[in-house]
Image (cartoon, rainbow, N blue to C red; front, side, top):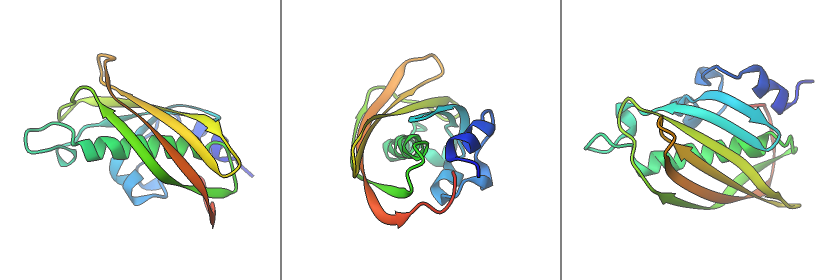
Length: 148
């Protein structure tokens, strides 16, 4: 049986597209760049449907990218439980525009028995930090049913 980590490692360089089990993950359609246990890196193209009226990446979409990246970093731990975000804090530092690619780098900071803390930093193509955030996720009674 292939672990989540092994599956993700086999997908490096590919877009998630329709193979992603989450509808929001399919919509974001990130390209996997790096993955290790407790770490996940992906690029996301800023599309017009991800922006506010002035063509800047919407803060809610940027937060969704971060939540998705941290969730997948947690998924690489191959815990049998599904973890749900219970809080999320984000600092927006710069903007990104339509057509730009942003890179999300997420990692698990601490793994407890029922709570996992993770963090994410998002960079623009120039390497400037555009947002940073952290979350806590709690184990649910729902079992994980598939790999990402």
